[in-house]
Length: 282
Image 1 (cartoon, rainbow, N blue to C red):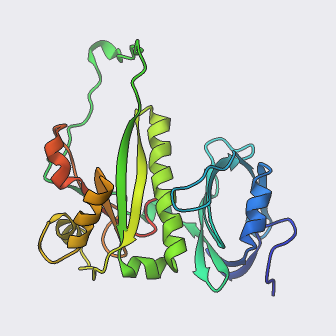
Image 2: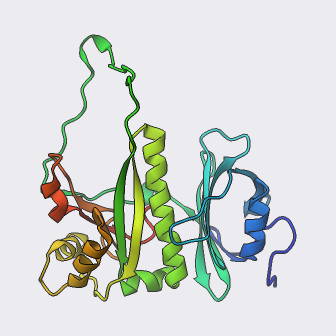
Image 3: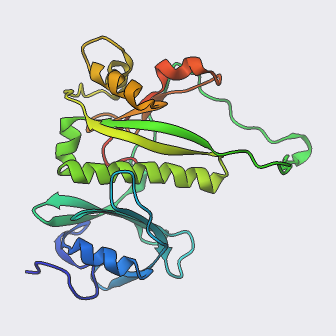
């Protein structure tokens, strides 16, 4: 039985189920190897995926976030979040699918193969009609006029709170903090890839003593309401941190529920809330 990974390959698994492996990782050693720009990833017996990694960046809560891809595989991507002895990682291969590495307690991590098609993407939005489909401009011409002057990037300050149930499911404070950093980085990379001139800035995270209802819409409404006896302290924390938006991580409900800002206005601040299920943000 392996107790640590001190030699390459640094990712090695003990088979438990066809879609899951239990890993014994020396996370500081993995981080040191990742800093070289290359890291071998072995998702299953006989499969070696060489990861090419960029430079690490500090997370708001964790020590480092690293993005990368699988060498020689277009469309692949990887994201690693290092937080002490916790490594939160996702590796996507167009040919093999998505692999998730998560803390499972007692110095172990679990590596799971995920069927992304089985995951719920979005439950919808509250207070807004379904947006119309985008039509093709007349004559088949798309307006792509370049901007004469680059606009300053827009910063959105975010407060993330989580339930005791979500923290327990993640395996503790460090694992859920790594999850939060990963969620923020996913969103920011999506903005970058799409040319959206904004980014999320995590200004704080905290646990809220809330027992989940089992319904994400109910949880979201309770999060938003100011004085209903549910998560009221979150509003005090939001004001102290001057957070633009607040997001709740729970274990029940959908992949994402939120209010939509149909009209850009400061009056939306009382609806700038969202709720997401743990481990579905990626």
